[in-house]
Length: 220
Image 1 (cartoon, one colour):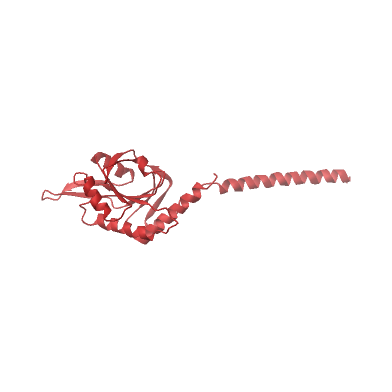
Image 2 (tube, helix red, strand yellow):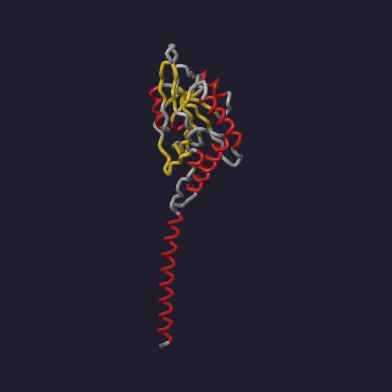
């Protein structure tokens, strides 16, 4: 075979291999840019949304008497719990667990807020909320206000509460016991079911934060 023909064939083969290699590279690169699926944390009672859920719009009052809206949750991770200050058991136990969780978060993790959404606004005035949440730490806050707005916010994080009479004229509040983790975009990233354990809560938070950071750094 003529030398020039062989050279042309070799060049053509080289071009074909280069094109084939480029296509394979593009396909592999495209796959690598797909979002990483949410971590499976069911073993620690945590469900992570592949796509964080939007919160309902709301306007409520903080323990300091200031107005809080959905925008105020942006910029920082927040654990949300629906409860009330007169709660005899679940609420103080959950708040104490969150305080223990806070001490287990390492310094390289962003430090979250902890927000109590009142299920009993008739009794949970800003002053009473402040006294209650301040006991647990400076990153603990509370909101109260119109009961329909509170109920709407609770439902937005998958929670419910119901008022009932105990038979002696006293109002009791039945409410959900899970936690919602709100991301810095103000969306619900995960729901964490009881029983709550501070070590497992810290582990869940770390896993969710690191997964979120990896996906945010992804060019795709």
